[in-house]
Every structure is written in C-alpha cells, then in structure tokens.
Amino acid sequence: MNNTVLPTKDADKICCIKCGKTLSMKKWRGVEIKCSRCGTLNTILEQMIEQVIITDKEGRILFVNKAVEETTGYSLHEVVGKKPSEVWGGHMPKEFYKEMWDTILKKKNSAKMKITNKKKTGEMYDIWLLVSPIFDTKGETIFYVGIEIVI
Image (cartoon, rainbow, N blue to C red):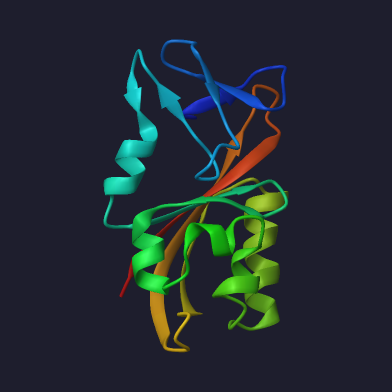
C-alpha cells in the first residue's frame, strides 16, 4: 500500500506511514497533515502549482490548496463541507459522474479524466483531473485526493 497517511483507531486522527507519529485532521484549513519528524505535507500541498482537493469518503471538501483558490476564485472557507460539484463542478453529463464514482468508489481505482469546471466569476475552464481513493489499513476508503491541472 502506498498511502501517505493511515488512520488510527481514533477517527479524528491519522498517522504518518513513514514514522508512525500521530497527525491530526479537521483543523482550520480543512485537513492538517503535519509531522514534525518527517516534514509538513501541508507545506508541500500549498506550494504545488497543481490544484489539490482532499475530500472525505462522502466527497465533501476538507482541504483545497492555494492553487484551487487562485484558479476558481473560491476561498477555502467557501468550499469546506461542500462537494466539488456543488461549487465549481456539475457541468459534465450524468454518465460521466456515474463512471467516475464507479471507478473510484466501487472499483477503488484512480480515475483520470478531462472535465470542465466553472470559476466563481462564471468563466468555464478545462482541467485534467486525477482522483485517487486513500485507504485505511483495512482497505476501506477514508479520503479522496484530487489533483487538477488547468489545460
């Protein structure tokens, strides 16, 4: 398993897979993944030029990096707790979403696709999206991580 983090028995905590230190989640910026032994993952995510979105297993946004905020015009506070389709998505055919959820939820595979999203200003834009399920030690999905590259 190549997960970055694994959950502990406590549903509000995850552990670093590299060193085992308990990391916390559900902090001010959605998901705080910080390890003083190995470095800070949030720092990496914030500096990426690709858009990074982390959702819970129901698809509700827990974290977006600054690239998402800059591209879409939506702040973190506006999107946390909502589904991406409620904010900037929902513009693809129903069959598209059915296939995507079948791939990531039922088959537990990553999905790569080209989609159209909408900025806060109403401007439409295209992206390449890679969505990967993140599993706990029992193989159950606990998060989804989306990486978006604006075309």
